[in-house]
Every structure is written in C-alpha cells, then in structure tokens.
Image (cartoon, rainbow, N blue to C red; front, top):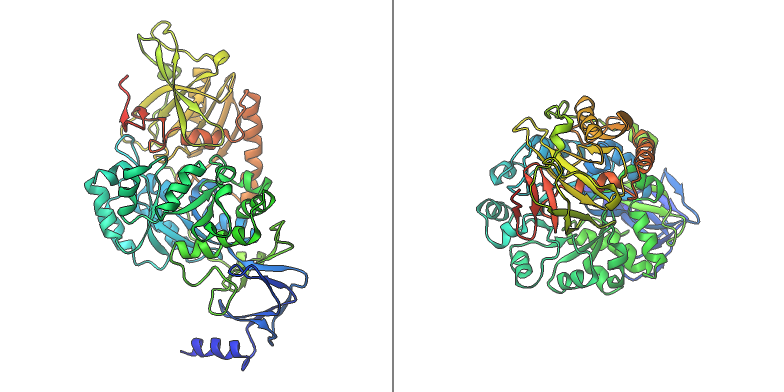
Length: 565
C-alpha cells in the first residue's frame, strides 16, 4: 500500500515525482491531439500528465514528441541471431518497450529448457519480454526436431510472471480437424491469449479456427485475406520482417477506424536489416510516408497492440500506465532520441547493470558427416516438383519442371536457376538427408548452408556443386551452428551461432557486420535475393504453403503430406 500511496501523492502533486519529463509535447493515441505539460513518473508508472510537477530528477526533452513505447506483437528473438540481452540492447533504444515473443525456435532444439531460458532472461532485460508458450513443437509430424512439447509440459509454465498465453498455433489443420494433441493445448489455455497462424485460411475453415479461441494472426499477405480475418474478429498483425514483407499489401486497410484491430510485428528480423532500416520504427515511418495517418500508425504500434494481448497497463501516456515512453524528434521520422522502459532510461548504464542469464544449448549440432554423394537425387522420371521462391514472402510456388536424370541423378541446372536443396537432420536422432530442387536464388556456383531452418532447425543447404554443399554443411558442425558460404572448395564467409545453433554469443554489432560479409559472399555466387539466409530457412517450414522440404522429404503443404519420391 505504501507504493500505491506514493503514486497517488505524486500524481496529485503532494509529493515530488521520482522523475519528470519536461518540455516535450505528448501525442495522445486516443484523440490524435498534442498535449502540453510534464509527464510525471513514480517508479515504473506514469502518475501525471498535462500539468507541472516537481522532482529531484527532471529530464529536459524540449522539442521532442512523446509517444507510447512500441509493442512488437509477434516475433522470435532467436531469429535476430543474438541473445535476448543483445536484442534488448539493439531494439530498445529505437523505441521498442515490449516484445511478445514465441521461443519456439529454441524450443524445437532444446524443448522446455529453451522456453525456460527465455522466461528467465525476460526477468532481467530492460525491454519487457512477454513470452507466449510455444504451441507447435514440432510444427507438424513431417519433420524431425530435437524435442516434443505437449500440453502437460506447458501447464507448469503458465503462471510464470512473463508467460502471456499460447503461442502461434501453426498446425491449423490440427485445429480444424481436432487433433487430440492440439485440442489438449487449446483447452489448457482457454481464457488466456491464444495467438494464431493460418496462412490463406478462409471460409468455414477460418470460422472453425477462430472458434477455437484464437484471437490474433500475422500471416495475412493480401488485403483481401486480412479483411476477411478482420471481419471475423481476428486482430491482424501487419508483419514486416527480413523475408516476410506484408506492409505494402496491408497498409491500404490501416486507417483511423481499423487501427483499433490492427497491430505491427516483425516476426523475423535480423541485425543487418535493423541496422540498415530499423525495427518497428521502420514500419511506423514507412506507413506514415505511404499515407497512413500518424494516429493510426502509432495506435497500431502501442494501444491497439496492448489491448489485443490483454496488456491493460500500457499503450498510453496516461496516469496509471506503465512508463514506457519513446521520445521522438518527429512523428514522421519516428526517430527515438530517448527511450524509457518502466521508467528506466534505456541507456548504456542501465544495460550494463542487468543480470545476464547464462546461455544454454551449446554443442547442439549432432549432424552426420556428409559427402558429395549424399546430395544426389535418385529418380527415373523427369517430372520434378520444384520449390518456387517468392521474394519477400515465405509462401512459395509449387512448380513442376522437367529435369532429366543423368547416371541416376538429377543435377542442378544453373542456366534455368534450378539448384539443389537439401535438409540434413542435426539433432543426432536419425541422420535423415532429403534432397530436392528450388528456383529463385539465382545461385550460379558454390553453396549456402544454415542451421537456422524453421522450425525444426536441421541443416538446410542450397547449392550448385555437391562438394561445396558437403563442405558448407560439415562446417556447421564445427561452428556449433550458424551460416556458411562456400565455393571452389573454400569457405568464403561464416557466422557461428553456438547457442542452440540459432544465436551468437557476440555483440549485435559483430553479428551485423558479419552478416554484411555473408550477404556479399552470397552475391558473389550469383544470389539475387536480398536476404538469402532467412529465405532459405523458411523453405523448410511445412506449415506455410505451397511446397516445402524437411529432412523427411518434399512436403505438399496444401495436402499436408510428404510427396512420394
């Protein structure tokens, strides 16, 4: 009660505030008006606005515009390739104060221990990391993962202070056909937030999916798809990641009316992209530059996001709200000059004062040693299923190409941009190796390999030369996971990701700079994709239409089955 009494006394001005922000104007995301006056903070809570307050600590923010801190409504921090603590240091100064994450990448490698690592880390970061508990480990029965998580594994985690609800339910066929395992998880989280993932689902199947209690969804890639989901009560999360770029397609729907039911998310965005373009700040200023009103953009980034996920204590600069505040040079530029998370200035001293949770998941890459012969594709028929890459999307085309077998093997054909793709099981379970073909990389020589391979995180490799594919794949075991580019029998560039084969132990600046070298090395092989590594990772995710590949073979996602070889 002493804390409550302090808040009331400071809000009324009977006692000096712990902290006062003075001289700025405050953007009200309810009315769209600019408010004048101090912002008074007691501990982690805003207690006063639109008035003058006393404090021993007054921060001069003259000339700036205050907006509520930004909320990323869906992301996998592992896909930033750095630990939660480096992610905190990377995005919080950009105005991001809450991240709603699903740690299903590390969970697919390490199981419940991976989720626990994120829950523990979330207690120490400046950024408020809210953890949705991973619902699909594995995402389907058509892949080999390092772990399996069922409803009884998740139930003990529900009451953790950083646990929010059930993470994206990717197995949408399991929902609409009432798979027992999925049903058990849905029942376990009835009444809590349940996040969705249902690309291209519509009509009665969409109705059934939403009726299961799912409330948010980030997979809409067209305005038509998003509109139907909005009309059926789903909160639509506009995604703009390093590969999945849906902002342009969905912005026409975002206005002052729909902003209450639309939010922003990044899903998967790496430090290179963040360094060159930004994080949620990029989405906001791009939306405004393309004609979206500042009210709609900032409401979607804060208040609407908080309400969508039941976070009643944030999303506004108003008394009683968590003191999550981004201090901007201007609304149009969305250029944070200072960020406050729960009343703490997100500056170097605060980052250094954090207690760092020890990383886990070392030596997790237990892949078989491969040779050039392992990448042959034995077949006696020329008709070939080919994954068609769609730049900027994680959905793919299901192409059919004629590739004549030669000496019992279908070879890459770089003249037609038909290169080999392989997935190698790396959890030490069965040693599976599957091969197929992909079109859209533009690769002319060499190979690219990665252990960031959604969601099972086996080794994914594309290449024009089998020897280079073997070299790149085997190198990943030495690195404990990561990215490798190889050509002519040499390693051209690499990034070690030893934390579960997903995250670096280095500062984000090192990861960002290394990604530049990797991107340049990939381009030297002829690659035309802007983000080849994450694009490669999503070619192995069998819950995203149309054609994918796992360690068990090529997957026809529309039929939800492995294609017979």
